[in-house]
Length: 406
Length: 143
Image 1 (tube, rainbow over the protein chains, first blue to last red):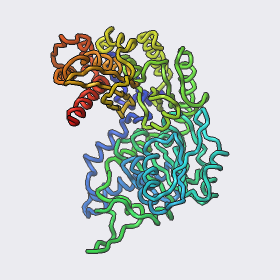
Image 2: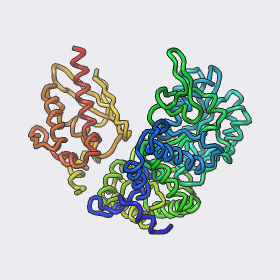
Image 3: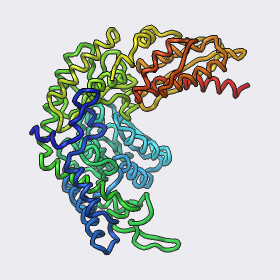
Image 4: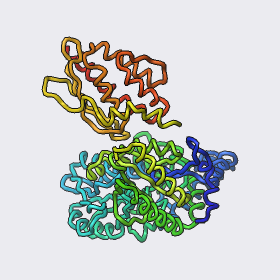
């Protein structure tokens, strides 16, 4: 990776507690390059207006900027049509939209919704709620000891009664990439649709929703160099057309009467209210930035870094890494002996190294791992081997600090 | 940022040699509290009789700050009246806000004064004290 890329991220060039910042909490949120910060600034300085209604010039500029961002998202994940992209607040809102609209409409008693115990709470609770409200059964695909899933188990868990399969492409804890394309094939063969949580995959690898043949795909802008508060839901046109909106108001209507109203066509029928225009513009700039570097290049960089990190971290006596021995994505979840992850994160922070500690919005997975919480270092395109070295030496210091607790 | 402000010897001592860790059989008030953002949890048992905290024990899991704080809190309030215990809880809240507070009645608590410089960790230190307040409140409601 070109070291000049790091220069594009102003936030990385500061000291935290007297040490140069090493930011390793990218699975929580990524940092933003100048191009994205400038794009949002430019939007507010030259284009800001409401979309789809202003007759004036600024109205057209804002609409062009907003709809242009939608086209970028569609191309980025290779959707067949731009109207299959609905802007949302993020992955959570996108998944809730599918659950509330599609899930509640199609599920009834006797039906099944299939997920895994590794899902982020945002791809678990919405389905729990749908199951409770409709009488459908929530089923879990079993996990292998290293967090991978076996396709034979997928075949067994998904039955002809399954209506929805919902799964993350990449786990935010275990660094596992699930065989979503094969799972989609199995789901479709049994008459179910597949909903993919793309929060952790979209920022880090090339995604092709047509090749995966997934029915829904959710993503967040802020994890892929974009601003917070913007994300997207991809859905196959026929499915989206069959669904009812979940938010009603301005922007999403065609004709409003006193007792009946009807909706705009896709994608706007799902975008009630003034949309997140500046956020979409920022996301569009983030996509341009990532594509300029190349998603394959980013994936390669992270896979090399993940291999180096796991190798160096394994040298630390008493450190346990969760997940597969060989990983391709830059998420490394671990515990350092009996030192509580909170204490690990505090000592690391004192050395300027930012990691996450806690349950990572995955309480059922923590129970499966039989831990109350873990520490997690997660990498992105601007991280390098020096960052890993700083992490490792800070971990060794932590171990020394806590002495016999390790 | 000085780590030793946070992890003082007294704290590490309570963490590694916890006092009052466990449960007891007597009729007791039990309070279960957790800290959903980090997964710390405490189960506090209190024997409150004649307006006095006769016994206090805890189980749970969490970081060095939350567990050492639980160890200190149970030591501190044992034998105190409920009123005195609540007064200590209030003084502990002030300590977490960075105010000057004396704990002549249990000096170990002053070791936690450094926590106020680590905003992310204050909720770890207050977990046990919140459980205490809840336990005393419940007892009050029964009477």
